[in-house]
Image 1 (tube, rainbow, N blue to C red):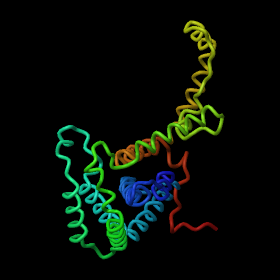
Image 2 (tube, rainbow, N blue to C red):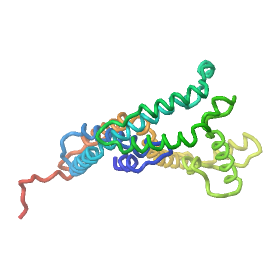
Image 3 (cartoon, one colour):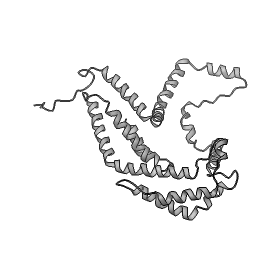
Image 4 (cartoon, rainbow, N blue to C red):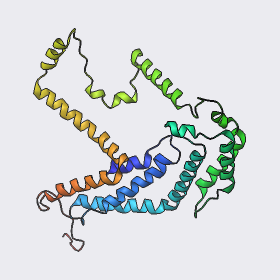
Length: 271
């Protein structure tokens, strides 16, 4: 749970206003909602989770207006993307309805003119709208050539992806440190040299089953953290609810007088 909170607060990404900001706040809301499902504190670690819940609530209350401002700014960013018809259409039917340069320019000009920030806090909205006006005035004409020139992409993401693959390939063949893709399965890499599939099978069969099971268990334990964060990003409510249910089951199996130290009565005093 602490790892989920730390990841929600410190996560960063190139997606504007989303990861590390708005998405992190929404993950904190899911964590607070999951902690509400905990039973009343009995054990010492229950008291810790209760304190953790109160601190999360305090952080959410403190940043709620700022998060609303960020959410409105993010919605404005999505509206701009729709005006620019970005990302590009994937189906042929949508590609046939591709707008021309003049239509996009009129829609963007109308959006900039009619957009008004809302809410008690408007800092993110004002900054986004100001930068949008300035950049549209300076570079608006250059951004619209993709609607007039056939096969001219709206971004350079494919080019950057190609450069990234070439860079990773160069690192592999040059012996430099591995890239991020190799980190997930780096502990499971095995090198075999064989002239045929039969010789390869004989090499694999020489590994004792007990040793294979041990390393398989180590690999599964190493993957638990990554799998948890993957589920957390896909569906925070479901992932955290499953964690809470597992915690309740583990908690119910323990005798509070035998396996855990119960909380002291506030009216109890030692001599």
